[in-house]
Length: 365
Image (cartoon, one colour):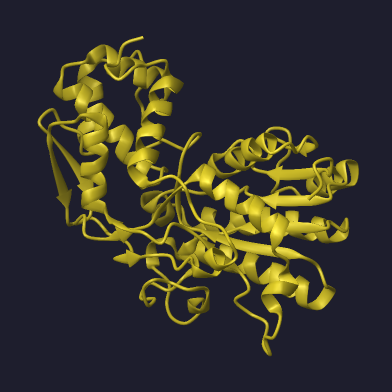
């Protein structure tokens, strides 16, 4: 990509898109285009068509998606498949119609079967059943991957698909019903620490910055405690979903952004399809190739935050896939590797979380 080429980052305010936007800026790309949801509804094909007609981007990074954690995925199943299909179909077809030079589609490693051999390589796609709790989201992402692949085969486009592992970083979603595991744990453990230390001012500042269920900074102590308890946050201990036994691979979002730019600049679909009799599985995993159990992750976050209370796991709640380690050998062989280890990333995200609220580590201004 030339530094002056017009690059459209769809979803540039989210966890993924904001990291890519920031990294592009730092590398000197100065012709970036982004629209908030209020400015452009990507589910509206007429609006998307008009946007492409007006802006004529040469490169597109499709990071916009309707995302959430295990609770949200399992509860809002229709929303996850419908919204994601609409968003990606509209952006991909208009990229084709307006002759975009290259498109990067971001999926997720949840596209792989529940019982995939570990670590999970790109070749595992569509080999057996998906994990039930996130099946609708996974099917939408598989459809996006296959749409890019099919346009490439039929029309000679250069639409690349990457499948990042579990991401975390600045601009993450800390809503406890819809967030992913690391931001959810950070907020729960932060609030549990405040509750254990009777730091009511810290709790009020947290709720003022980010509404929690029906709570805000004006909520009473009684209402706050009742709601906290509903989410497993108690004065003497913290309860988390599942057994704590599943293993996951976590990638710092800014490392993921760096990988995306690396792919945009160095890898074409023709490179991935070369020599294949049947062209499939040309997507690329992005991850660390390292894993940690959810139980050990919780204790690591507690260590970073300074929480001294007990952490219990509720085995009556679902675990999701028991192990999901990403095979990153394809991307590694091309010359890219992650830089930020998990403990450093958690430290950075907790610091960002506190600063974004105007808090310091003690809950004070």
